[in-house]
Length: 146
Image (cartoon, rainbow, N blue to C red; front, side, top):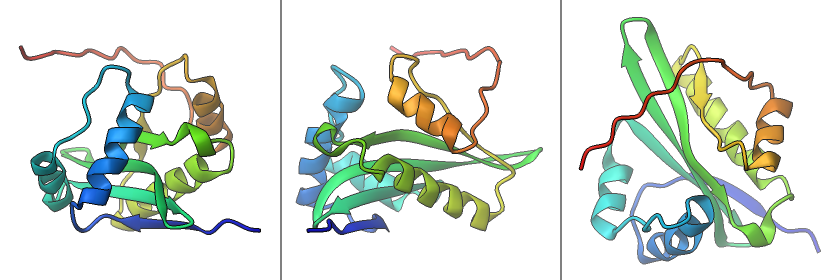
């Protein structure tokens, strides 16, 4: 029996979405607490980002965020927190989510889409390279508050 994959932009923070992130976030970043209801609502309503989910047979199994960067050099976008449930990986869901986000960025007129990926996530890194992302040699600096 073929599974039905559905991708959609989240328009409302629901209990189902909260439960999905409680399951998905630890798979993305160990020790990272899942977002709360208020934060998810702010994210969904924020005009500078799109939250996209993947459903397999009606169940949320993946998500990714496209964040807009408006700069003097033009419109850019970043893919953030893309995750697929480990129970359904290697079925093309990550690629479908990434392509959906790329399509959204291209449609909006972004010059490029950037993302970062932990080098230990070998399958994800191979996927991004296969999809045409080029490794960009740069210095990434991070400043943490608190």
